[in-house]
Length: 271
Image (cartoon, rainbow, N blue to C red; front, side, top):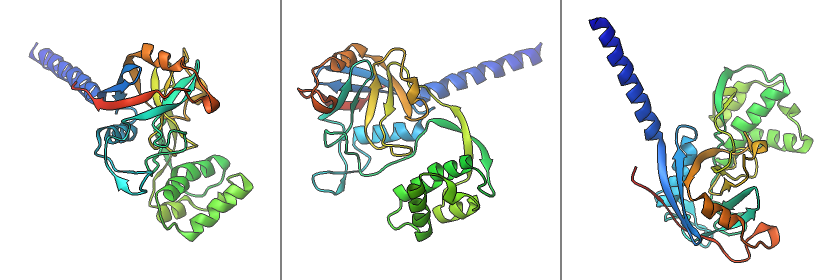
């Protein structure tokens, strides 16, 4: 009887700890816009790097490059930016300091679309391994290195020229790990989150090019063709009526609202 009670207590504690961990991963933010408020839950459980980046920029403690001075600075990055791209039955997009979709915080970071799979090593003997080396090692290395290794630059140029991973074939993964300092290399695991209706995800210009731009999905049930291509890091919990109101504004060239719709502020709420 005592043993049974002991295991029941252990089970209850485990459940409580799991619930606490899940709740601790959720960060609630309030996005005030010129058309109303949007409440969002960010999930560090599925995208910790992305959530920390978004909060750091929003709250003013993460450095970014000021486009006016070209100097690194801090401040409430998202305050007074506009939704520069709005497409009916698809999404609303913001977070560009230039207001035209070409700007960012002065740095880029990796995607968090998939869990990490098995570690792979040895010779690059097929296209799949070549793609993994390209996306997980070479591109992040070049994005974050001011004076990259000449050998990596040469490989990069050959891959770009041939538009294939063939230049990587026949070399060892350890070579790229040693030069870039990135590793180990993993296969692609399970998808962490789908690009569903009401989710907030990172906009990008290709793999591992996240910065500050984001979009909120207005298409119901979602945009499944973007699964695995854009990091989902939260969802709207209140204010989808505001999101749809923004979606319905008059647009001009490049899907930009004729009259600016502004993000007045983004702040973390007390949980």
